[in-house]
Amino acid sequence: MPKSCRNHPTIGQKKASLSALGVCLLLAACVFASVPASPTATTASGPATPSPKANTATPSATWRPSPTFTATAELPAWQTYPGPSTDPPVPIPPPMEPFDLSDDIQSIVLLGTDRNSPYIGRTDAIVLVLYSAKTNHASFLSLPPDLFVYLPGFTMQRLQIAYAMDGIDLLNTTLEYNFGIRPDHYLLVHLDNFSQLVDDLGGLEVDVPRELPDLCDGIPTGYIQMDGETALCYARYREGQNELDRNSRQQAVLKAAFLKLVQGGNLINLPELHRNYKDSVESDLSLKELMDAIPLALNLGVEGRTANFTLGEEGTTPWQLPGQAQAVVFLPVPDSVQNTLQMVVDFVQSSAPQSSRVTTLEYELTVSPTATNTPTPTRTPTRTRTLIPTQTKTRTITPTRTKTLTRTPTRTRTETTTPTETEVPTETLTPTP
Image (tube, rainbow, N blue to C red; front, side, top):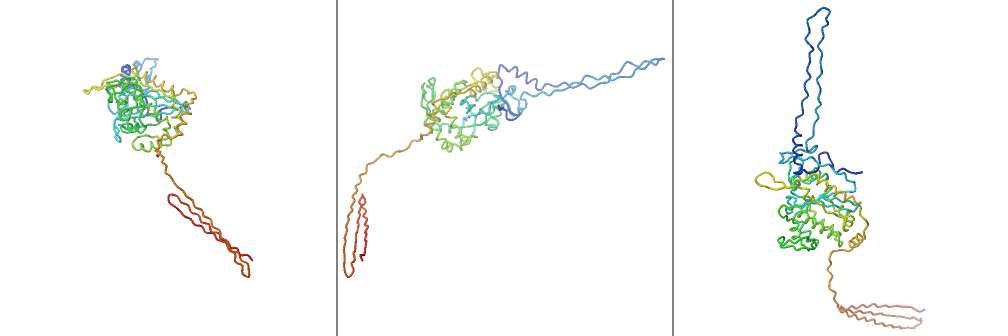
């Protein structure tokens, strides 16, 4: 059966854009519109009672019921989610309709903070990943950290501060409200964790589409080998308000890191990586869950099994926050965002053909990628000399009774670099009647 992404009634999804700002203003105005009160029933008197006349009936007064009105309670824009604690600078958009995902589709949000461990800081990298072990497909959706969305129970704010404000629960609720998908798992990496992990993997080969001479001491175009510091610099840099370009670079680094883990049998090092980073990397995934996901990871290592998505220029609208700071954020365009999310879901649900590449990756996994120190062989001459002297003596004495005495001593001596001498005497006495 399909499962709904909404796990409880106080969780939701999406965003509003500048093009829909007029609609949002109208919704906000209607939220607190007063409900007309039902008029109180009044007594309507009949015509004035005429003076009694002979043989004239006196009409009695009658009640005329007034029309009744039923007040209908209207939900606010945020519906069943927690309302804002402060007045937002822009109207709060309604939550996005949740996506019904089949049971085989799982989701995880990958987060990268702007602080070293153990400090939280803002999440400058936010990637929502949907994957399926049934179809062997995965979609990666990069979300701009400066996306201005509703944080349920707080106000309209940047998406990047949700985790810092109230942890993973608020972030998941924010993603569900604004995107219709509540992640099943999460993984957060700090600045120092990321650069160290890249170095532990032996660096990454990243596809750089254009030359960046002024970035990170200069980065040429093509497939470039990057160490941890360079990869971190390349993924974090944003030129002006060009968030789309930074999202693309983050996805390129993420893809290179994933392929480095999957190829060459490096997944065999998962227990060691988990042991080294479990105290600094924050996640709800256990080592067993990671190990169980190895077959899926190998299938995702095949070309064409993963796809990268961004909201694109049509999915966001720059908007300047009120105040002296003149900070610029991005308002989401609801229709465009929903279309992008539908493409993300559709790709995961598409089936993948069998590939011999998986067999190759499985074979590589059987070979340890860990370098071993092999000592240089040395030739040590050994001289061995074995001395096996054998001496046999037989002496017979015949008195009144004949008696035969046989004595056979055996002496063995073996010499190596440390001579060893072993003497084993053997004596046999055989009486003859």
